[in-house]
Length: 378
Figure 1 (cartoon, rainbow, N blue to C red):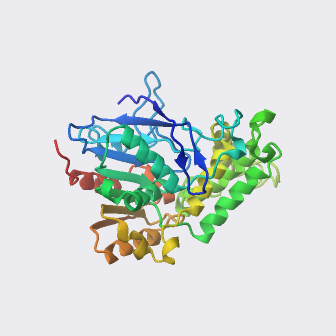
Figure 2 (figure 1 turned 30 degrees about the horizontal axis):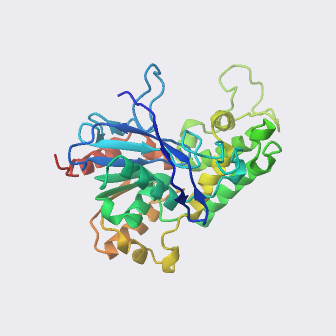
Figure 3 (figure 1 turned 90 degrees about the horizontal axis):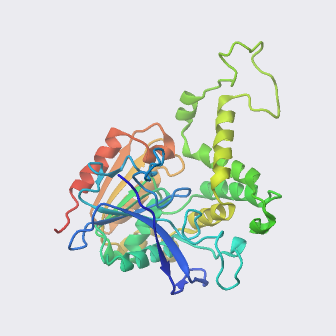
């Protein structure tokens, strides 16, 4: 399946929850499949922290350009593009095409940098709704997302309950725990204290806070994997183990990576720092922190979800300690309190939070079966 990047410009200002607004902005997106005559087969896929609108397929002439959920979306796959018209949207503030900190502020003529306004999950949903309006889509057959994308899917059912028939929320939560907020803060401080950050205006200094980005990614990556997976994949293996050049068990180096897990994390950090924007990382992790639909209801999630009318599928993974099954069950209970139609699957998977991106026959079967039951008009 060949993916074709698209972009849409919006002149009208988008009011943000912070009280600020954003005008003259662009949204990057991709579509897969064909919108039917009744415009009833559209499925919006919302992305997580470091992903984008490139959800599935490959770019023409680029063999290794698969979308981040290519195993899930496409002809004959769990979210079958022979049946559904799938839309992937890059969120505002991202660094993959939609207007973000690296773009020009129309009010000043200078790059936004740290002056890009704070955005929330609710702001992203409002921007996505504008895109759907422009595409002529009034009602979504479903909205789907994992992790932060799952929060957007949940928020869709509260902000636009009349526009969503089904919501698929995977490896997500109704809000972040204090521990999760703490991980995000440590990662942000790593970026903000990098001498090359320059208060978020590093573009005009010709620098990139790569040291901070590397550490932020290493911290995040640890939380995405389970202890079992790290032990199975790396254990306590030394980098030079098995090479025949080890005369003692340890070299006692304080500077160089000696264990394979250290080398792996450094590799992931280096790779991330080459393509991800530091201000985007700050913005998106803040959006994660702020999301809490129950906040205005005294912390009562059941009251918060009373507005929803969609049918739900929630999926969690047993070894996901960042967005544990307990958090998904909180959403399930709140929906059942409101007598909503809810299906829930808890998958016994080894891969931690990253399991929502990987192939698992039980997981893909659940998704496939659910979408088989989503009816669309001709």
